[in-house]
Length: 498
Ligand code: TXE
Image 1 (tube, rainbow, N blue to C red):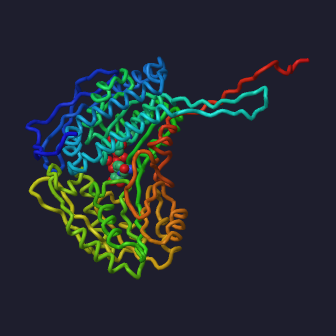
Image 2: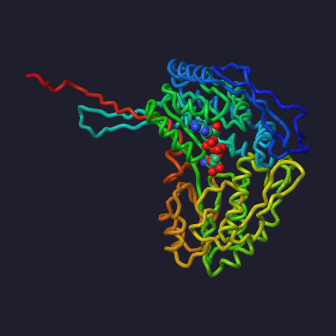
Image 3: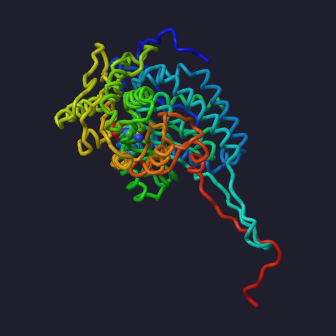
């Protein structure tokens, strides 16, 4: 396994990338530049693809699907490619983490951890490729036998966001490939590099041409066109609720393509008075600061039992004061830069709004000036009430709102008082409270006495307006399949015509 040190440097000139269709690299006719949000220095040049490029990518993926060069080989053969990809990722770990950190602004040590998680996704995907199977019915009587086949759904469009460009990609690609589907990926325009690097990895791993294609460019043009494309069978989208909604319209107005959607969250962390408060405070600090809070499963609403609320908020504020905000390329940094200018403005806008609404800043609330890039100190608001915008909207930044509760019922009601349902974390030593709250809070991922734990064996996805479908693990692979019922008669037919 390669290492982080020496401290990596910025590239001397921006690296120019091509886009990838049918196993071949293409130069962009028009390019756009991405500056590192931690330094304000141009680091990459990315092609602005056209609708012709998109159509070529879909044709390549369609041909690769229909001639069965991928769907027609054994699960074991697909698994071998995925395992080789995992090995190549181990070799290229720090290089991919470097580009992830440069374009996104996340700490390089965190990016390394995400590559490790991505490697695990390929390993689990390989297992899933071998284990994917249907079902049989031996209960239809002696003259009829039933089989349920799982077949790959076909050509998948994959649109990914900028907060975890490589991790979110890898929570999907190995499972899409395991199912036998082919795909066209459109990464976020601000973080395209590592999605393109994955094409190199998969090519070296022996993935047949045309199975993995990448087009780059803006969401509004090329992304929208992918959602509307009549020859794409399924679309997996991760991003804002607004664009998720437009994916639903695009599907209805084109070919009713199946949709997988992972959208916003306003996730509760519920702390009971009987919890280990030191552990819970550490988890709450991590849950809101990890990836600068630009994380769909960030725990952004602290719901804390009133009898310990003041003590807990003080403990948490003291811990948050020690978080190391700094240069993303410094291996000791815990919280890096805000990824886009627009997101920086959104977060600062909510910090101002929270104060205007009457909430109090217990810690943070300010920008951190490193002389380059855009950084915000992790922020804790106390005295928050449920109707405040900071308690309702997905801020997508390191801003935590604390609200007290008195009873278990009140904690459940507060936790469910959101249009979202992506994740929840719960802290208590009582098995009764743990089970009651876990069963009653509507969220797709639940962490009891832990936070953001688990691996790609476990499914991920949301309740309510946080999305449709599940990714990763056995459930993730099955999302990319469709089911065919096969009836086989044995013996002589009972004739209809006498
Ligand atoms: O997301 P967009 P943005 C939330 C978060 C954030 C907000 C806005 O609250 O503040 O969304 O972020 C592509 N048709 N999340 O504006 O626009 C785009 O190119 C098809 C939550 O960056 O949704 C990118 O590849 N595609 C979230 C991807 O969609 C379109 C992660 C996401 O961008 C498109 C990110 C269109 N019309 C943001 N417009 C999570 N759940 O983790 C854009 N895109």
